[in-house]
Length: 483
Image (cartoon, rainbow, N blue to C red):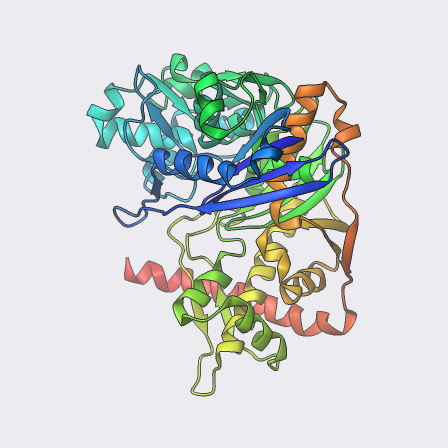
């Protein structure tokens, strides 16, 4: 058996797989977000660890004793700052934090070729701009930094005691030179970062360390289990769904959203704001459109209306299509707009607007954001015809069908699609522990449902997409008048 741990934005998920790849058990434990000021998004590293211990402890004790390896996945870009004793200096600053906008401008000014070096222009959610921000706004904390880790690697540190990351997670920091596969001295220099603070880089298919005896006793696992380096959640999701070779692609519908295509060469296209990142295994990269909101707006609306999301989606599917529009930018946007200050909004509300029509507009907006993402990928020279899907948003037939229609692309949903990164982490554990070939373990899952594009829906959605894009331009202009 192999254990995968995925440290998400809202919860940690664990997955145990049998040697033949079957998922035999899953668990999940949530933890809170902190927003100390407008644009800030932070989490407690201790909350992560306690939730991870609880999620592992929820598995059957006998099953835990059969585990032969552990793998890691996690939210990318987060800044985990440690002192000389490996203790967190402050809460981790997350991927959806927008405080470092000015620092991104500074980095681009200091090094105009940053996009060619790191695969994409610096963005506020990335790790390096956060450290530059800390040097200016929290200098006492900055002066005490001894080590910097990514979120999943903090969990790795607790498990095996080593400070290690993989290329896919390193790629999301704005310190990683995609061309050489190493930390960029220049990017460290201009971001107030000492290269000595940064972890070792090993492929996700390699062993990062071995489970410490005291941690093994705490978790009910065998001491000395190999722990693979793992991968950032996007790359781990790719391993989970078998997108590990040239041209393999998928969409991710979690808190954030991704449109991901594996490449066998490094192909940056910074103007399109496509992320060109190293994959977690040797010889591969990926091009990815990254959306800050993903399927999150559906959960946001359900929370706002204090109603179950399942009920709202049923009402949305039964509602008549109308001209109600929604911009899904609750946390700004990366691809294609690169604007963390952008915000969401409805257009077309009336006295007859129902909860179901609100949810329908939200699901359409999520699909439209993927249409924008696909356009950016095409600008970067990558097109897609068939995609698999992972993430909690895949549970919605309405959302899946709408994305298939607007992309004119076949979308597949498989068993376990909502635990993709955790499954990928478990697969990386098996690969590292048994020295198995990637292609042998990272197989594509059986697709249980295909969503074929419906020709009859395309004219209406195409007109609405054009209106959605015009709405965005209008909101952007209106915002400029309010600033």
